[in-house]
Length: 97
Image 1 (tube, rainbow, N blue to C red):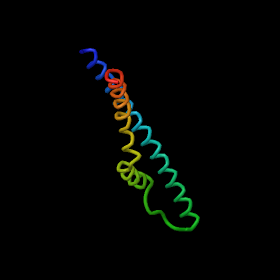
Image 2: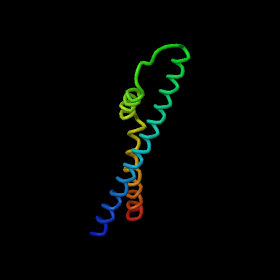
Image 3: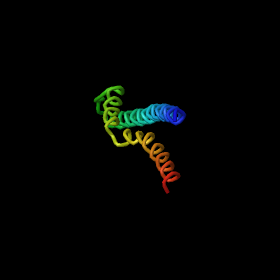
Image 4: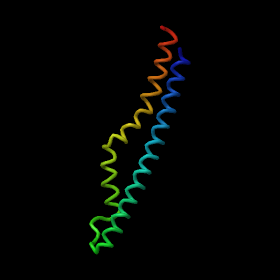
């Protein structure tokens, strides 16, 4: 029984590390996309002769605040839900089916 809890704790630790790494990676992809959007917007504004409205950092941070609230950022939580559900289903099917 202790082995079960030890393996469960190890599994949660691995899933937590995977969650953190995926969150960092996806946030960096979003940041890069928003930086490219800012550069495109600046190129369009300079071609039209308009001035800049926001600095790059302000623009990116404002978009990242929206990203935190998005569904894409929350879907990373499936890193916990899917494996735990799969293991529970396998245990149930092996023991009771």
